[in-house]
Every structure is written in structure tokens, then in C-alpha cells.
Amino acid sequence: MKIGHAILSAIAATLSLAAVTCSLAAAQATAKLGTGLTAGYHFTRTNALPLRPIDLSPFTGKYSTEILASPTTGLQAEIVMFTRLKPGAAKRGLYTLPADHTLLVMKGKLNLQIGTDEFVLEPNSLALIHSAVPSQIWNAGSEEVQVLETVAPIASSNLVYLMRPAKPVKVENAAQYLWIAPPLSEMKKGVGHEGLNERVLASTDNGSRHILERLDDVMPGSGGPPTHQHEEDQLYLVTAGTMMVEYKGEKMPAGPNTLVVLPRGIKHANTNQGDVLESHITLLMPAQPGGGPRGVAPISLASKPVGESKK
Image (cartoon, rainbow, N blue to C red; front, side, top):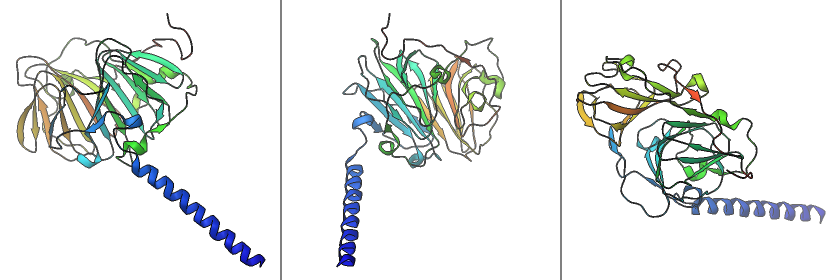
């Protein structure tokens, strides 16, 4: 009889475990992109290579995050997103990611919480948040905020799975994750890295283990290195002027608010054949040391820690 009871108990335990497993699977299955922490997230309308225009059309709600590129659309192990926050977009909750996460402010003033500290980031400022560090963003200002976000490396493209709710634990020296681009110095013309007038915001030199991110400004008649290829994925987001992109031997213009996606191994080049300055953001993943002049400087705490009054 004791043996029989043991067998029945084991069966009951197995069934209970199975029920819990099924319950977790069901919960994961019902979690969808665009809800909870991913409210406003959506995929880009085109997976074309190499040019993908950003969707700047009006949107409902307070948040819009367009997933521009991921492993399902040409990249190795990265996700690149364009986020827009309307004035008054509130906090949605802290979360962590199992990868490096950069947020480069392109427009407006971004409110950012890291652990228990709050900051305000202005255009050309970048947050480099490491794996498992809790953070969240919102917009307490009066104008729309636009942010380029990159997450790398990832083992899954499922952001619902990757973004885990977190508690506001203290992060030692949270300001160490924030960087601001120096002003442009004397502009140079040329072909190669010198002609790009690079301002590096994230690289292995300042703790970015997987993402090289910089601002490039190209004078008319100048450009990057002649036709070449990388072992890494490279992307450009054109912010001003027109970039002439060479892709697999074909040339095509890329105007402002266009993401240029160059998967590893693709022969490419970029030049400015216009008569005005061409500006873009460059991403190279995984990051490699020596990606041009460093040009980075830390920024200080912009507001009081959470829980303290703000003046």
C-alpha cells in the first residue's frame, strides 16, 4: 500500500508540474508584441535591402517603436529600432535586457531612469546600458522625442521574451552609462575615415562590448573608404543631406530618415555627391576596437534621484 501511495503521489506531482508548464506556455503564447512593456512596438513596413525609410506618419497613443532591422530581416544578432514619444508619454515600468542596449537621442529631451536615478538626455546624447541593468524611458517635455535604439547581441528576436520587468534597485554610479557627442571640430574633406569626421559615442573603448555607434558628417565630394566589406553588420541612418550608397555594385541615393542596412560580407561604399553636408549615424556590430577617433565625454546627472524633489 505504501508503494501504491508513493506511485500515486509521484503521478500527482508530475501532473501538477505539467499543469504549471502548460500554464506558463499559455501565458507566453498570449503575450503579444505591442502590449505591456512593448506597447506601441511594431515591425517596419518593408524588409527591403539596403534602404528602409523610417515611418514618420502620425500614430495613435503616446508611444511608437518601429523595429527597423533584426535577425529575421538581415542582421546577425541585433535589433535596431526607431522610437517616438509624444509629449506626456508616461513611465511604463522598469525592465532589463540580456544584452547591451544603446539609446541615441535624435530629437527632443528624453527622460531616462537607470535603477533609481533619473536623467534628461538631449540630442546627440547616448545611453549605453549593459545587460541586466534596469531602465525605462518617458517624455515629460512639450515636444516629441525621437530615439534610435539598438540591442545586441541577442539569441531571440522576440522582444516580449527579452524584456523582463524589473524593480528599482540602486545602480552604482548610474551616470557612467551616459555619453554626449563633442561639438564638430574643423571639418575635413577626403575619402576614408578622415572624410567622415567621426564622433564615436559607443565602442569597446568606453565599455560597449557589442555595439560601435558614432556620428559621421561628410563634406561634399567626400566619403568613407572605397568599396569594401566587413565581417560585421553595418547600418547607416541618414539624418541630413543625401548619401550615395554603393551596394553590390549598384549605386542608389539615401535621403534623410532612411536606414541603410548592410549585412556582413556585402561589398559597399558611401559618398556625398551632393553640394551640402551629409550627416548620418553609423552602427557596426559587433563592435571592434579602433573605430576612428574616440571623441566621447561623459555627461553628469541631469536631475534628482527617484523619490527626491526636483527643483
